[in-house]
Length: 246
Image (cartoon, rainbow, N blue to C red; front, side, top):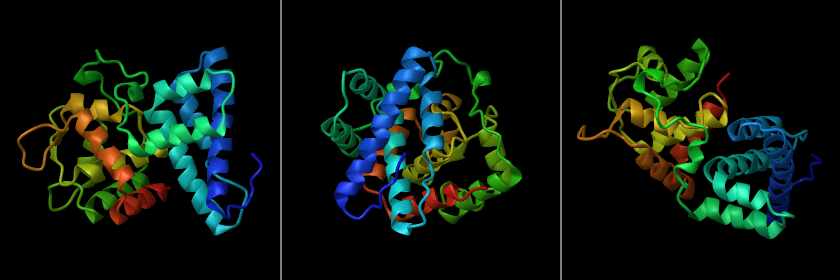
């Protein structure tokens, strides 16, 4: 994709449109014509457009923001994306309609779960992750730095147990928005499966701060939408920390 320097707000809109138009072409070719799984299409498209050949810091930061928006649109609003991409043409107005939906709407669960099997049992739950020791140490550091869980110190063993989906694990959540952002950031790095909310709910791994109920996929989805609509410095810091994992 040819890159133009980002100077004004219109440049941001144009780059978003170019990326979504390119995603549409790839979707029609790979998913519609060749039968590729939708979630594989999303992962592959985002990973192949993550970086730009530009040394300008403003351009690189804007592109990182835009590619995050594209991933959110493709991932969280699958039904709407499929309908838009199936039409004869894709315009800037179509692009901005999807962007407005991303900015203002709740995630259209359960469509975003992609190929998750609703009949899966606890024994079959898996994030399909394979973290290195360095990556796991970074996740643990993030959890402790921003106090994601109601424990004095999160240990490596705690996170390894969580991501291994070991039956019986329970962790009390200190701030559900920040926990949701952590998992969403890991998804953005293609480190975990797209249906992580469903896995956390079915495994009953997360418990509310007051200890009275399990955290559901719906509450995680709502928390993530709120974090996206009203991002805080901690939200940005968590995404940055996970983005810098080796």
